[in-house]
Amino acid sequence: MNGTDWIMTFTGKHFYPYSPIVEDIDIQDIAHALSQICRFGGHCSRFYSVAEHSILVSIRCPQELKLVGLLHDAAEAYLGDVPTPLKQEWFQKTEHNLMMAIYKRFDLRRFRTDQSSIDLIKKIDSDLLLIEANALDMHPEEWAVLPDTDWKDIKDCAILVQGIEPEYAERLFMAHFRLLTNPHP
Image 1 (cartoon, rainbow, N blue to C red):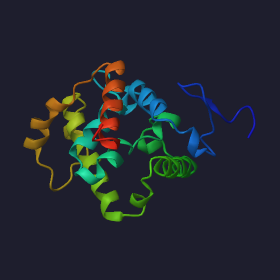
Image 2 (image 1 turned 180 degrees about the vertical axis):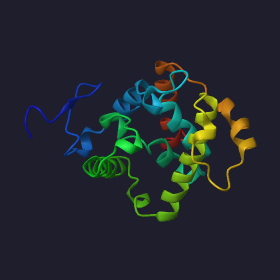
Image 3 (image 1 turned 45 degrees about the vertical axis):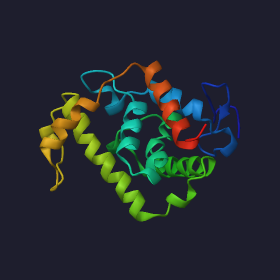
Image 4 (image 1 turned 90 degrees about the vertical axis):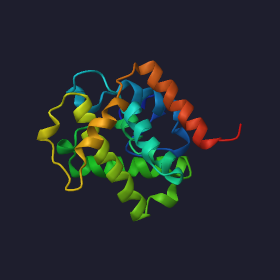
């Protein structure tokens, strides 16, 4: 590791995204960064953070997957929200490696190979993508629609997408994380 392969995190850590140190992964860094990153590369009608998106994914997950849902995009806190068509193989490997470190940090390793859980999170994420596209005036009719897509559900759920301020999204993300990791304070 040299002086050019780290990023400075919100909490002041030198973080090495290509060779992450599990102990350096900090939920406060994740919450803060995700609250500052706009989904869809900023191509939406109003600011909508990855943190808000992650909370909505978590809410739609069954209880045992809520923390996995909340953290499903946590690597973006260190790598940014890169639109899927731009993710080359090297980036996908970096993102995967970082997610494995995040799973280890938050003791979620059992889910990394549970294909049914992975598939469910992907379905929830895909469904939410269409809800977000509708709510954010992103021409949802242009998006690939899954055969079982219920447009009434998408329009009804669009009210969930608020586009809240980053500071509030960060606080909500942290509160949701604390609720999931310490449900009985």
